[in-house]
Image 1: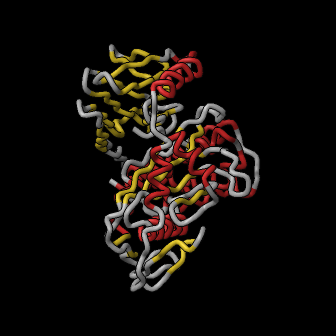
Image 2 (image 1 turned 135 degrees about the horizontal axis):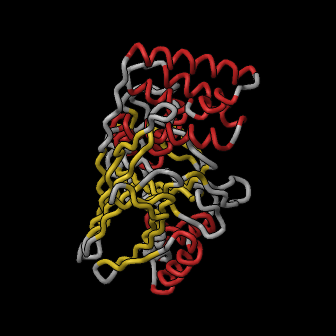
Image 3 (image 1 turned 135 degrees about the vertical axis):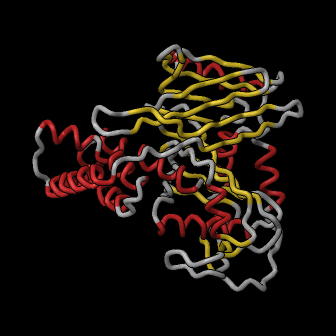
Length: 377
């Protein structure tokens, strides 16, 4: 089993970006340009490595390889995006890899690209790239090329060597358990061994609501691979554990002002098998709350007026300050109730929310995370 943290270190130390791996400070697939660039790199790496895995490391400074991290990204439906836009799509896996020196909410993103051996191309137009375009790696660049060229297998042995040198061992596993227990000591950290092989560490603040147990600030890691499986700074999470599986049901808090309610968002089931394999299955449980359209129109117009004040840098009353905290989730609810332009308003608000306060920007990111899960499902 590959220790993904060690794999990232070996990729970064092996060489600069080349034809089998790329590194990025960050990616943003919530916008067309970000989606297009991400798809281009996936296409190029898959075509340039028809017989071996290739990788994208996210959260690393380009000049000095400084590991600065990115936000935890929990979109299990990223393969849906790949399948929608690429012909002969490779198998793509996005994993969140914690590093001891990073803050709790930061990880390094690791994208693993497993080719099918067939030529990958864009299925349809996106941003400035045309459907039918084919990309290859040219050094550290992803470039469009004619596809009647012969791709030489120059990377398989190099990648195999890097992966072999990144295998996990008992020392890495024990160190990972001790590091987790120490770092999460304020949140009741625990560990469980599955099938005498897999070690899962988890922690969270426990609370009991109406005889049901929930956790917040939940952190779950598969220590064997040094992969963070789940992280939530705020939302309520229900956890169910048996001898073969670890199940998480995530809830999201939605509503207006004092009428908020928790809704089931997504179920994640991790199944452990006797053959040293495991599977992760996700199922969207979310059903959007529906509101009276006349009431929603009034709330939507009021929120638009609030956004205009924010853009102009005007001061707010105490009541408006409360409404401002609800702005991201208000636009989200409006969008889920078929106010299609509400998502454009939310994206328009992003830089102003970020400049106003860290709290508002975090609430914006949470709303976009819920939207991303719903859209790709």
